[in-house]
Length: 248
Length: 78
Image (cartoon, rainbow over all chains, first blue to last red; front, side, top):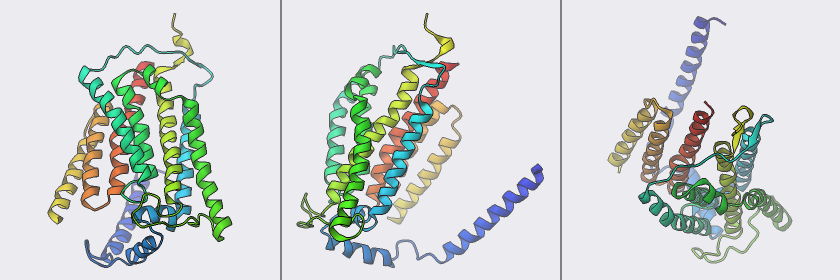
């Protein structure tokens, strides 16, 4: 295909998408209007199941099956990164020198914010059914918080803080628990991921049935997954070396 | 509120342009991180705190960190 033809194909494609988008936008309800058929169904459904955070009800109760799909995509992507970034046959695991010393102020803030971040993350996972956030947000925050150890210290201190076997197991276990809770719904109410536990009192920590458990499962899976993901990049920087660059 | 959303949208546009027009990939990781914060503000203003929480962690911390580590690896190999 010549360059000229390719530009034409691109132009026709862009024009088609543009016209389709324009037609769709013309029929959208006005920005900030009160026409929300989806909300009118979702909010009462959330309240019926004692869930204060409607988003959590949507993600884990009303369309929990989609979330299991997203969870599986996350798991699969991390497996792909592990496969792609593993040391190849010509590479060897050799500890690379890490001579960088962060600024004193950076170290101080890193050490101060490490426990704070982890506490906030756990809080977000625990209150997922009540306030904004939940397993994904808290989990990924946990993974980030742990890496403040690298910002404040060195790669070796980070390694000590995160034994990989714990997080590799956590990622798999969290995803498995999610699926197991789904089958518990099948056993208890006849359909996958049915909210089978008592809904409790609206607004209490232990309300919303299975949602807090699903949040914890996702929190463990995503938090561990984030650590495993970043660990592959750290391994490439600090441990892997090409064979021709053998340290003498 | 509409004014605030307008300001935030303008900042998002400016932030995106800043990321695109930053030449050095290492600096780009930083501008992308700032862009992540601006996006977070927009999501908060649009009453989507759940999305804002995801955005602030993924967009300002995880992705820039992966970019920085990748750049460092590529530099070391040269």
